[in-house]
Amino acid sequence: MSNHTTVTEFILQGFSEHPEYHIFLFCCLLSLYCVALTGNVLIIVAITFNPGLHTPMYFFLFNLATMDIICTSAIMPKTLEGLMIEKSSISFGGCMAQLYFFSWALSSELLLLTVMAYDRYAAICHPLHYSTMMSKAFCSVLAAGVWVICAFNSAINTGLTMRLNFCGPNVITHFFCEIPPLLRLSCSSTYVNNVMITLADAFYGGFDFLMIIVSYGFIISSILKMRSSEGKQKAFSTCSSHLIVVCMYCTAVFYAYISPVSGYSAEKGKLVGVLYTIVSPTLNPLIYTLRNKEVKAALRKVFLFFRN
View 1 (spheres, one colour):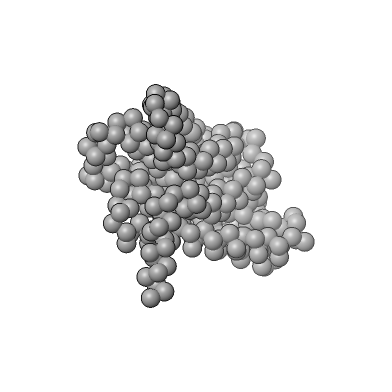
View 2 (cartoon, one colour):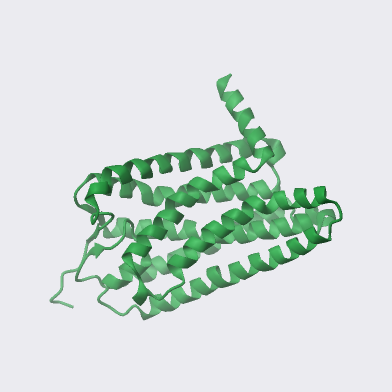
């Protein structure tokens, strides 16, 4: 290793292979970033200042909106900078920080979607015991558990990446620091990293997805047993927004991560990266707002308050 130069910074390839689209991409990503920030901040404000939304479902939505802001803010500023300058570089420490906050937010959102599926299961399948099953104390423990578990998981993966030797090429074939392209640049063994990635995939991609499927299996069964069509429609409307977000989010993440690092494709990684770093955080508040009368009513109160 003495004949190699240790890498102290990385070059983010970004979208440099398509320079003719840089201005268009900059405008699109900046617009989406602004919409994502505005939408998620409005949801947080609406839930915070409206006592009628202080329920388990909106408590978890508050946490999801917070993680959306962290996820997109960890990536987009550097990405937008890379579209405006010819060569976008990031320090080793900055890269590891970006990797940590991104993986923390991404894994937390997946786990939160599972918790939200359980909340909908409790509300629809056990309505009489809902307040007991989803007490404030239990919801707080669930939310804290999500944040702590995912922070610990992110710290392990980031720490394992930091211990690798990077002594050759330093061009990351992505628009942000992500584990698969970083492992391809390492000149030391990545065996332990691959094992941890596999375990994380099994937990977030396997256990989480299984719990969501089981929860919705019971939910659908309960809805079908309802006699009135009005009751069925009301029950389905309470979980339809969550189901749309789960399908959209999990499809993108699974496509990106449930594959070996050796089969990593830069083009695929960038495309899917755009979906779960900016498109999903932008659409999440729109989906929950447009399909939820309570949130729309709370947002109207917020707008009227600031107008007055």
